[in-house]
Amino acid sequence: MTHHTRSIRLAAALVGAAALVAACATGMGGSKPMGFFISSTNPGKGGDLGGLVGADAWCQAMAASAGQGSRTWRAYLSTTATGATPAVNARDRIGSGPWYNAKGVLVANNVADLHSASANLGKETSLTEKGDVVSGFGDPVNRHDILTGSRPDGTVAVPEPGKDTTCGNWTRSADGSAIVGHHDKKGTNPDPVANASWNASHGTRGCSVDQLKMSGSAGLMYCFATN
Image 1: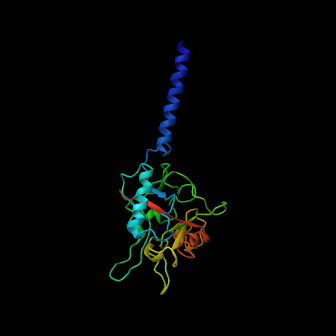
Image 2: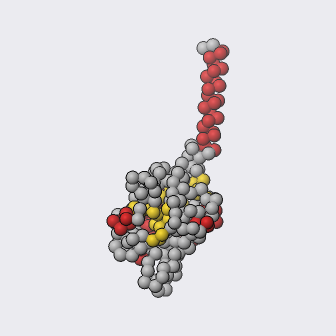
Image 3: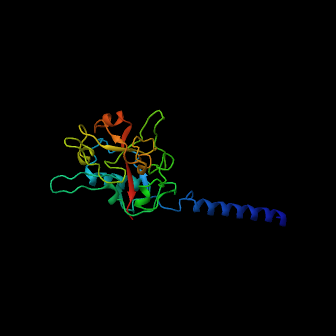
């Protein structure tokens, strides 16, 4: 091997190493562990997720399927007060951040950032645990309605008397309704704090699988790592 050939190969190796370092720095190399995703599927009963416990277990299972089961995962869902049981705010149950998606891209630094206009949320960044894009407005199948039961600031959407905002605190698979956000930011909530309504856009037509489909929902939810 000539000195010239060795020099070319060394230069190529250095360029490759530099590219790898750059990729890791930007998250492309997976240097940042996934801490946020949209569940790729629903458990199968529409708005009945088995309550918060069942929803959290689903997030945990989805994360485990992607090799991130060692972290503790929680569903971004709020619940209303019932009897002696107080309401639960989605923002209070997801940890403190920062959170990265499956591609290692930063989504938000902390809870305040997540609920501000600076959050890096949208169709290209709010990915599933598999790193896939969820179809949205304008696609052949629209699945941009993500279950939250929340207001733009991440607190529970308190229903009017006789109304529902959480599919019966995530136990109903027929009648009822739930507040959903639009992961692609094609929202209907004019509040600028909502960051184009990623978490609070409108209520669903019901809580069954078919009723959720009517408004562009597959019963998917946001999942966050708390540690």
